[in-house]
Length: 387
Image 1 (tube, rainbow, N blue to C red):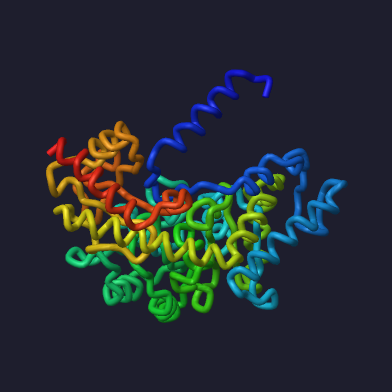
Image 2: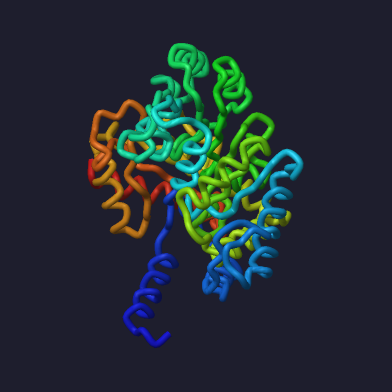
């Protein structure tokens, strides 16, 4: 690379990633093949439209690429093309969620979703997101004692508010979501059920987390978390809803798709179809369980008491340490987490009561249970100095 400044920054960032213990739940480490596809000549092509229906010439190979990615997505999650449509063009998860909502419900209608402070996501109708200005969020949360979704209360809220859409899924909920119960709640009020499986899609593909597809009308996932692909998103939708969603993705809110990104997604889907990925997914969850249990043994409070996934929340303020202070101190020691709200948090999102910890990236690096025990001890040593 002739640009010395950027080359230097790439080298510095590579070293930072190699030297640090990355426990950010929404990050992972892609393969060399994914990186190669992401930096390929597909970045040169403009391809407005969909396969066989483009607005530019020279897209015959692009069509093959998108069709390959779509086919791999269907196969990975064992879906029939007769029932499900796949859109691999969304640039990332937030515009994908925006597109789905805009396609399916009129402006101003109610969207029932997990409250951001309880583990939800900004793009599910949070007031600080554009989705919260276009639709009215009806929030649901978790039980204060158990830290788990209260399905009886979920049903009561839905009956009272009659939302047009119910969203299952979030960004910091560590337990298994009962998609069948969400389906029953949605059916009881005539709502569309959207599942945002961005965090757990790799676990679903690996067979260690229940699949939402038998119950959902729409499933959205990002591709860069446990699926271990590039930054991007995929929308799966029932055939009767797909045309509306596709039209909002393009030309509604996006222009030409990032075909280099789609090429990298196709590679990631290929990798996730291999037996080795199932082993990886099992190790991710096992590592998260071991790490959370070791921290509990050391006296730290884990929200909901543990985890069924790749992530969990640690309540640092139970020991008088703010989430920001904890995250900053850990990063100085080479352990990277993110500050995070915990359920019923009384502190600011900028300096909340907890941190979020995930094991997808360290598992990709080859770390195992013994490493989780060592990391737990190191976290404990750093945080004890603050208390």
